[in-house]
Amino acid sequence: MSPPRAAPDILAERMQVVLAIGEANAAIQKTQALMGGVQIDVMNVEEQLEASGPTPELNAALEAVYDRDDAAKASLAIAQAKLDTLEEQLAELDRELAAASPQASPKSSRQ
Image 1 (cartoon, rainbow, N blue to C red):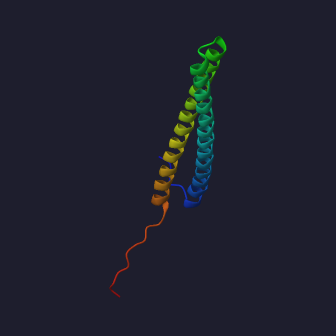
Image 2 (tube, one colour):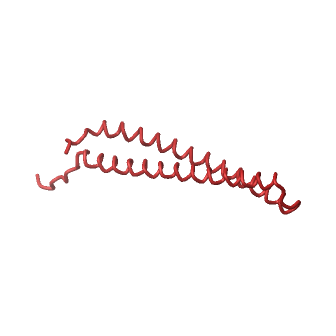
Image 3 (cartoon, helix red, strand yellow):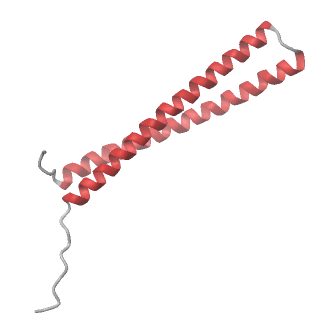
């Protein structure tokens, strides 16, 4: 087992993880926005199918937007898994930091 790290080293790594969490959250938000756009495209193609009936072009368009929807969902799952891993790393660093920090000793009331 390696010796305990100094608090400044742990804090430096913690800052990197916090920055990575911010990036992961941004990726999730971007993917969610993309998914919203894809859902609108799905609704539009489905409405066109209902209005005019199936055609090879509309069937292909529907398949394409379903593929985009599946890809966006997969991308979101990957981004969420990355965020979960980073949050676990942050929790571990916080535990390590707590263990590395000097504990306040209770003062004796006797003099």
